[in-house]
Length: 332
Ligand SMILES: N[C@@H](CCC(=O)N[C@@H](CS)C(=O)NCC(=O)O)C(=O)O
Image (cartoon, rainbow, N blue to C red; front, side, top):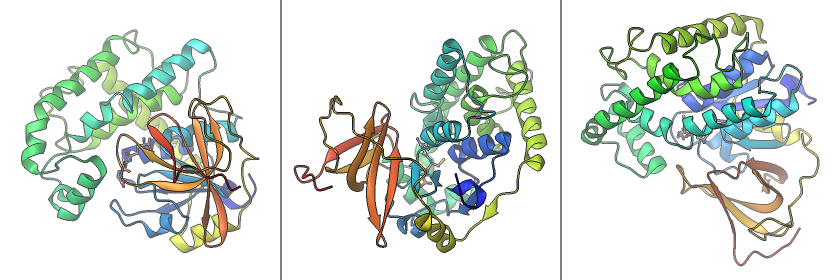
């Protein structure tokens, strides 16, 4: 992609474990990019300036195409930068990678992990943050509720450590797919566990240590070493303020050529129909509206007008709902 920093702008905040998936990916690949740092709570005027109502982090722009959701972001980076891609190549390994992605995101590992944020953390004592997370998740973030959830969440996470210890890592391999470097499968498997391990007070050490899960802990240490080596070798990301970021994006050309709508899609939506798109797992109240430009098995693309310009906003299908607005008039 043309333009400075490969035309990439990443909207994130560093505490975000989902954003780390993308940050690690970019570091391990040595891909040059720009970043626009966000607050950990709403409002996010920098994203509103792009016409995006989706409230979650990370969001990544390539040129004037904007990608929501870390799963889609990583998929697109693999496609845009195929040389040295981190994804598996055989069908079987691709399946492992995909199942680890589902395991750590959709199947609830992260939801359980987020119940282990220690209640004495400053963020959890900030009513702005807890109210914001209630809007995001639709559940209570009171300390009492968090304390009540903790035992079951710990049991769930213990089972996750055990799973990796006794299956993929059990033969003493360095990396999940027996490669000589970390791959995407490692990122998919590690991000939640590493986040918890680094979050002081999240994991009680009498249950989680090198003693209990030696293979998992040495893999986590190895992964962090690999990141430490990769980071100084990768280009240092350019930091953009919101205005500069949106200006850069709105002036860029589209990174992708004309998406198309699959006429066999079960939703039966036509190209150009006005639709809304929103996640069904969290952040469900924040709906983007636009004209349907693209629809495939696992991607939907909207054309959204903002500041007199068109942006194209992409979402994965999994975990998202697409609905026609006002009977779905087609005006493109
Ligand atoms: N499926 C999404 C989930 C993203 C997500 O839940 N991100 C969290 C941060 S780790 C978030 O946005 N929290 C609320 C917020 O920051 O507004 C993805 O893969 O990107």
